[in-house]
Image (cartoon, rainbow, N blue to C red; front, side):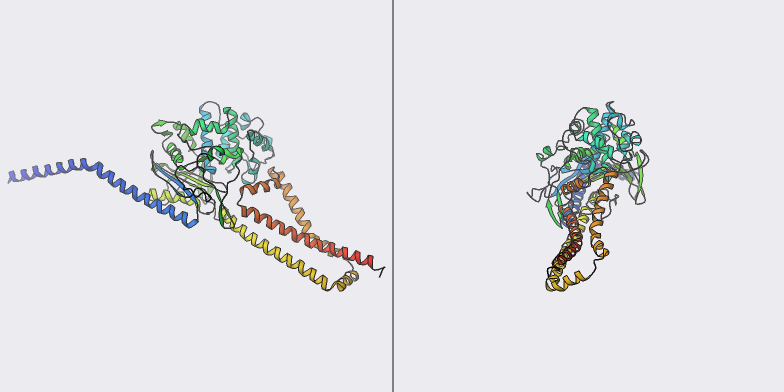
Length: 534
């Protein structure tokens, strides 16, 4: 019996050994096959997700990339690069990155610090001696770090038209114009997002490095990272298969590119591809390493990702590092991200360090109110858990602006038609009852209120325009009328057209009401002149 048991034991041991040996031999192929199946399923899910969003929202073109560890696991283009040429979007198609550009500018600043040419805690005026705002004392307290963290106290949206300059001296003009800017708060006191901060960082980079801002980024960032299809020069982008931007015109999508002002480039006009953005995400996920090479110091990457200021949004605390927002998902997952919008492009980049995963989405239009949910949606598919990022409300989008513009244009047309009918009715009434009308005017005493009241809308309109012009000049330092004309270069055509239609109709009504009084006065004078002869 013992011999039988021993035989069975030997056979079982041998069977286990053989099974283990076979498993070891086959493990790699089994694992590779299982991984391939999982990757195919993920790719299929992402394909379906993006295709559905593109079709449902009428987005012309999208390029996306997903990275994990040091590898690109997904990269693809969807739709068309231009409604004019209908050329397909590929991972090599160039898109405008909008405010995602800030992370590149921030890195350039820290590289200058690593070279010993810059101190983040010195005042901006140390590097730009001509820099000042309307409050000289406060402006001298603004440091380079304040600009990086958006805690300088410089105002946001309404002051940004002052930053639009072109030409080789664009940065100098930007610095000179800052003396008209009124600060919103003390430097370092709190967060306020402003493109002026990063435009000024561009001026500092140019001053300290001794070369053009675009050239420094090319030499120290794009080339070392192998981002061969990334540029800040519009002419270069045109030669790199750049996509056309798209805007809405009363609900219809049109291809339309907008002018790029050099002074705003550091804040919002890097142009890149999904392929290059994959390299950018890998560098940030791997502490500056790409292709087994340390191209960026690890401590620099860590500093870029460290919150320098925090604020509350939708009840959650959000930090801002240097070109990156930092926060946690509802499930406690740490994330870094930045989105960007011009009036004809949008972009997103997301890092999830705990899973060593990054996602970037590039879109060549502004016809979707929910375009910034595509990136989190992709990340959710990759990670298998729901991710959400703070987003602007639905009404704060160019699609909503176009919808409002359609309503405004329709109202303007109706108001104009009513005006035409009103003039026709008044003229017809006058022609039919001319004698009675003249007698009534002559017999009635022309009261003051009959003259003043019809002029009131015109007077109020002129006073409002003058007041707004003065307030904008005093508070924000720029010419309102020049800005409105320039706004036409950026905004969707329908928004600009509808705005001027509204203004024109209001002016016409005010003029017509005032003209009635002038007409009545003129008729009264003519009647008096004719009375002695009759």
